[in-house]
Figure 1 (tube, one colour):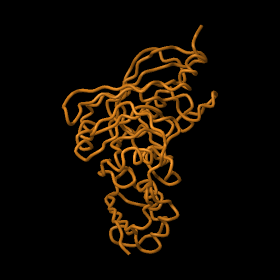
Figure 2 (cartoon, rainbow, N blue to C red; figure 1 turned 90 degrees about the vertical axis):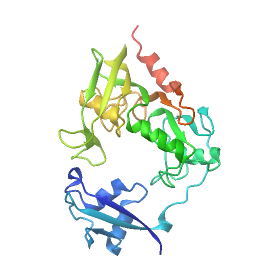
Figure 3 (tube, rainbow, N blue to C red; figure 1 turned 30 degrees about the horizontal axis):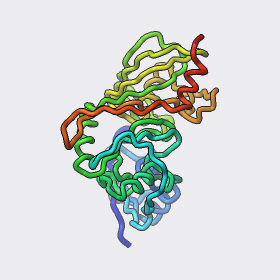
Figure 4 (cartoon, helix red, strand yellow; figure 1 turned 135 degrees about the horizontal axis):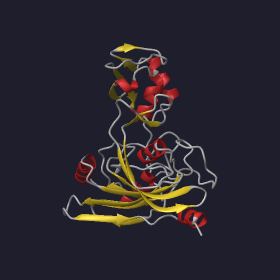
Length: 306
């Protein structure tokens, strides 16, 4: 049977993780139970040797995974409505709704933004990130709403990826956080995988990657909450959520990095408001804004100080 091979070097931040746990985090389209089957069948090795699922990884080792090609799910286009802010022959700017997953993964193969994009774009999407993520050059969390760049070809994808890497793309978010923030500020703290819960990210004292979030107070709200704007200088996983929680101002509704959802928001109150970048084809600077969703505006009205 044909297979695709994935080779993963083990870094210090992944040391002592169980082999099956590590792989379930790294290869999102495979379940942990399927990974365990691959380990038993000898399709997964560590430095060329078969190991048990419970094997504790060590820094410097190399994990090789041979995945039978027929287990990669076929992603089908779906006629799901899209809120398109801008579109041309090279890219789209979409306003992703709260609750929608960006790309297929375990449990979400038919109702994602990618399924909708495949239907709308008739297959004209960049292929750099593989069959599960066509057109996707960056992403936002399921419960975060707002603006997202989608690339229709590899030329555009590479150019946008370079701007993301250089931190030259303007990305402004809006959020409601717990606590009374007294002044504007910047959080400049490295983010890496949490040592206590590998499904979470955390501010780390060593390792991780540099992450910088600039925040500005927009309005003080009832019940000791604050409406803020966040400008991303970098773009790490869960960056705003982790950074604001690290200064004791977790996002309202964030049950992963906080613990309160009194208004039943079903996830963090966070919206990707605007994107600004240089168009790869025209070399012109363009900026787009995704309107703040109704649920967010309703919360602001409810929490407004009289």
